[in-house]
Length: 387
Ligand SMILES: *Cc1c(COP(=O)(O)O)cnc(C)c1O
Image (cartoon, rainbow, N blue to C red; front, side, top):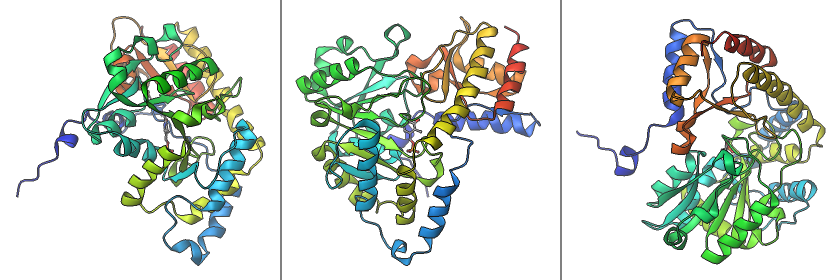
């Protein structure tokens, strides 16, 4: 029998992290003392009191059955409390909050609810690869909005051609941004809301890194007047509480948009394991001291790597948020070639910018997901790099 993949799978670009994994395996098989700064997955464990809450919840037989599709009301109420406390935003737990099996799940599925074949989705480049892939799976077409340093890595909405604006149904934005580490201003969000209203475009803001910050607290899109009329915000416990393996997140905002996403989900999945929701309620109700501890760890790492890269002559901005450093590669080198060179000469692995889209070329991304000691070691090795 001949197995043939569907067009939508065949024409996918190779998943960035699969290619990186291959490079990593080869280096490891040669016995490299690898410092892996390539993947945005916190190395710090989930706080103990959250794990303890999970242990207790898992014993309760009530949680062994199918969960509700939209999430337990108690979980959605905890999200509402968290939004009120953190952003002073009021949300109706019944209609304006939807649980997700990690925010990636919701991001990947939302185009299925709103995109018909050949509809346009506005997608940032560089950006999280799930935005264009989710778009493609729904039959839509990504129009890539370049994020350029000269515009503080915000998309220039004025540069989007009129015919594209008219055909666009949905837009993804993401601040604090992966991979550039940029943060957005309220002015930018106001501009997005006006643009979305004028052209009838659904805004999907990905706020996965809102709690990983070092200076000012990043805004929620939902804090801005009119945001709930045009969009939703994706959020995740993954990066905030070091819970990437648990698979839980949520979307909040416009109830009709959430109902559309919910309709897709009720037909594809059966919600989040309730014991995980119980533990997540405990996480969301934790006071902020624990988040401060996590931020302080990343801040120390950030300063070490930032200083080390600057000392070597790299062009890099000190991130105000996220655990990424977005670094220019020396002129005349492609990002992939530079990643390969760095791996070969220093046994450090980072991510080529082009993996996040065409406009990521010319950059590499370092993730601060190794200990301070390992990052110090990485800086020593970078110091010896031949440039
Ligand atoms: C990590 C990440 C996510 C999603 O994480 P989940 O674990 O699926 O909640 C979403 N968006 C961006 C930009 C990310 O980096």
